[in-house]
Image (tube, rainbow, N blue to C red; front, side):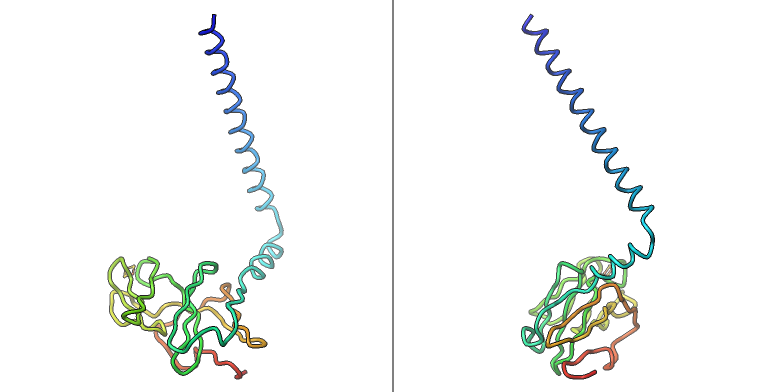
Length: 167
Ligand code: FES
């Protein structure tokens, strides 16, 4: 008798579990459908607002430093001359995440050993071009990085850096 009750309660539990899983799946499908049906402009506006990241005060970044930002997946590099670059952390070879190696003062890709300088320029192949850039603007002494605006480039040019106090 007790065995029968145990079987019944296990069956009841499994049934409840399946109902729960089914309800979750339906909720997820509903969310995806509502997201799909949302007007494109509205989605774009949300994404654009999310894309601008306040990195911090200009003075918080020493010349010659690289700071990683998890949100937005970029590095903020401050060049020795005070200019700022926001670099994508995605390798331009096959897309691995490229860490900054502070001891070597360069980015080194763990996948196929491409290396990039602090300004994102290729130091060692097989990466075919420099790390992508994100737009930067400096307002009231704060560095703002727009991760929605990415620029692909072959190499580094001085005009790519953004300087405090310059328009
Ligand atoms: S993915 Fe970085 S070197 Fe290949």
